[in-house]
Length: 95
Picture 1 (cartoon, helix red, strand yellow):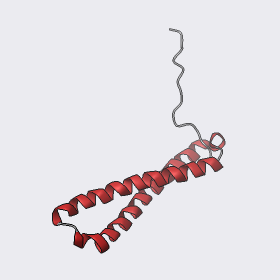
Picture 2 (tube, one colour):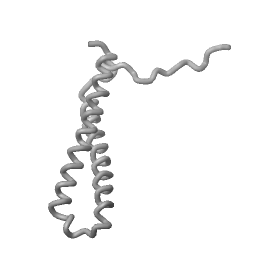
Picture 3 (cartoon, one colour):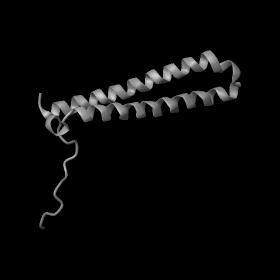
Picture 4 (cartoon, helix red, strand yellow):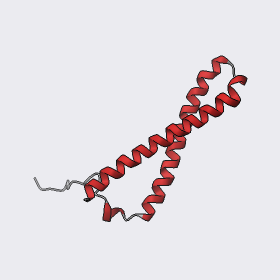
């Protein structure tokens, strides 16, 4: 496999990992909420709790994603295996 293929596969894998972490965290928090807290919260606050659970799951997935990404990138030589996503263009060309 070439560097471009490695880059695309890494980005796809990291995206799937991030979404999976968010979904798993959401379901865990939602199950905990329905089992332990839903009976003690008023009906008006229950919709806000759903939004809070969603926000916490997104934030948690971002934090876990960053930690996993930092761990993987410390063990992998990025320049050897991946192409850069953005190529710096030379803006100092004479007219």
